[in-house]
Picture 1 (tube, rainbow, N blue to C red):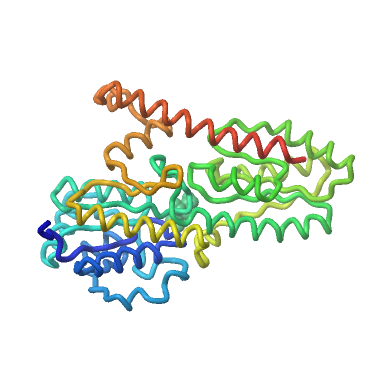
Picture 2: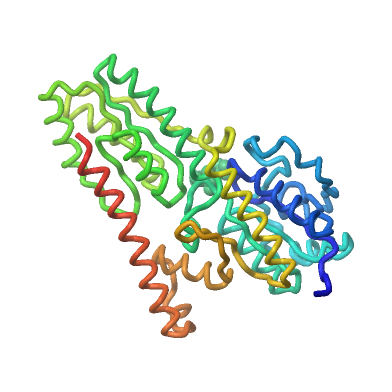
Length: 355
Ligand code: F6P
């Protein structure tokens, strides 16, 4: 087969995630092995607009598989959302002889990749966000590391809670999604967990704490997802203290969750996904997101994935649904139900085995 691609670009966009470097490394090494050059675009889509990029050789990506953050830097670029910004980016890509792009990030990044694909520049998305909120994929690069950071921090909080007989309400990231919260609540043995997706039974948590106090339990951890809103965690801490008599502190873990060395899970997922993205581009494919489903790395059409995401999150507008093939919509609803059920099952497990 005649090789169409001589040079591709790679960028990281949106919030950084541990494992993004491992993904870039995999993209670069896979492309070079196929005699395709790679431009490292700096600062996400902004780097494309501002022509901030450099050719990457095999050694430019040495010693980064273990590094957090993104050595290509990242940005949430508003200019790129406008047609003029996109046209600038396309022009710069053409001037730099970039035939295709690998875009590593979350949903915002994929919307950008979709826009570029529609305008003739082949793009493949690779998931990179700690939130794990790309609905078409079971897994996003960075999720495991962020959760391990959370459990390390919460284990420390538990030590001091035990010494002082206290409760700690801990707010974790995830944007509107409660994946980090639900999983870390189980892994830290939290007494309660509050996420936006499921009604929070405050009375039940208060009762649990009161009852456990009678068994002489001294430490309590409550995990709250940031999707519950900025004031929720602090207000809950005050309520717990007032209603149960257990002194209660509040901690927002915030951006500490985004840094640090990627775990094995993230290094491997990033390496698999990055290589697959390049393979797809070289096969002449475009407008796809690399996904993980039941452990298998494959791909989904970006249009489908973004629509499915809106269906899953209950954000799809009636006019959007009306435009879909009813069979496609039915399939999305069925898949969303399976995904939601798994989430609820995890949430309930956490509740049922904690005191
Ligand atoms: O998407 C990753 C994430 O860390 C979210 O969990 C959080 O809501 C958001 O980014 C924070 O964004 P910023 O880094 O712009 O404060």
